[in-house]
Amino acid sequence: MNWLKSGFELSFRIRPVGIALAALYAITCWATWRLSVDQFFLPAGIRVAALLLCPPRLWPYLILGEYAYFAQMRYPMIEAYGLGWVILASACLMPAVALIIHLHRKAMEATTEGWLLSVAASAALVASALKLGLSHLLWPAPPSMPFYSNAALFVLGDYIAILTVAPLALLWMRRRSGYDWSVWRLPPTLAALCSLCVLGALIALVGAHDPMARALLQLLLVLPVIALTCMHGWRGAAVGVPLMNLMLSVTMPTTGLPSSFDQTTFFTQQIIAITSTALLALGSRITHHYHQQARPAMEVSQAIAFSRSAHLANERDLRERALGLRRIADDIEAALGETAHLLRANGHEGPATDLLRTFSSRSQQFRELTSRVYPTELEHAGLYVALQAGGLREAWDSSHRLVRPLLAGDPCQLSMGLQLAAYRLLAEAVLLLLEEEKGQILIRARCGRSGGQLGIVFTVALLDRHSTLTPATQGLAIERLSARANAYSGAVQCRTNRIRIMMRDTPLDSAWLAPPRDVSYSSETSARH
Image 1: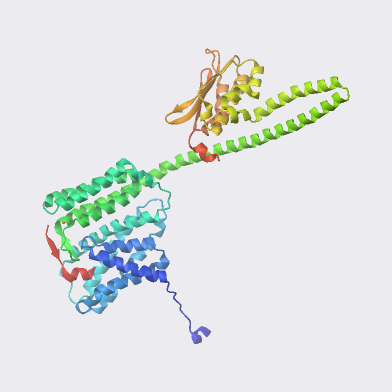
Image 2: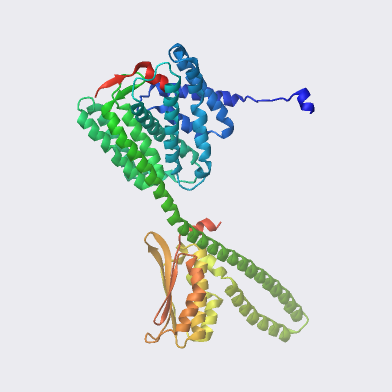
């Protein structure tokens, strides 16, 4: 009970960045209010955008900033509308919209952006209900306009403003999502953006003289936005819809004073509000389905990359082992040379000659075996030389079943990883036919470029064209060879008497190697805003 005697202490830390944020928000709301009309009330969009961009710990400063913005605007209205309305109506809008944003936090973490429409509709309805409800409750005299007319006007104005500013804030929030904005430099996107700007300029030039032409051009503004949405999903809509709404607001007939209203544009904006909603929803679904379809492709690409990386790591390990064996062989050769020299020096010419002859034969066999572990010749002279001059060729010749291979193209243009994979696949395919089939074997290979990509195609076939590979051989070929071929975007095919393998040198390999009449409602409508 000591705290009842001594009391308790509340502390509130004021941050300079928060004061700066409150001042910036108040100035922004005041400036956009000067540019707004009843049917396009930009401060409503600024309110939602600020709450989206700022973390919850800074929301009290936003409330302070909005109260400062309302205070300078509504202080002269105290005598006309009462002190209670000025205080309550100025303090309740931001907390109410902040609560809406907070309730949508879980939805914001989803992969789709459809929650933005829910935020816009909820914020517009709640803010309009509070503004109209408090004015009818606290004003000495109720507003002159009918309640339902005011409600439609305010809800539409807030909703369109939110759909103008909030998508831009969402784009900023998603700036680190890894999206490639360079695709916006492609001609179709540039054409859609230019069309949007040209239509906006035509509305400004023609609209003042011909209301029907202005209404038609306003509706045509939707077409480029549809194109952007179809090409870029929700990002296209998030750029196109704000541009469209801003052009409509700039070209809207107005008295130049706050609370201007244009009946013709109001009807057009009802259509635009529905269209903006549809486009943002469509863009969100397009992006969602794109990610659903792209995820399996990304998983396949990642699996290919992992497989290729594993093969390359295995080749590096085999290379180190082969070089280590070569060094050991060189050391043995040097030691035996010294031994032979000592034998000759002591008059043992015969044993020295036998020793050198035996070692020379064994050394050649040893080097052939090490070259089959890892073909170092491939690094210096390419795939074709490694096939014809290494230990693999000696093993083939000893079988007396392989004829002279038919090799075309320059394998040195291919990456080292692809050449190594082709070397291993050729060795495995030939060994498979030697073990499972009878008759002479012919190897054909061709390196070149197809469809802008380098690659290699080779076949290991039985020389007798009337022969056919057994189903067991075909099954073993697919089983043993597909993994390495798939790592290089390739495929293994078994046709009649041959095994055909195609591989491409994709960029993935290098990544793994190293309204006409203006009406002003004076201060009454402005006060409700």
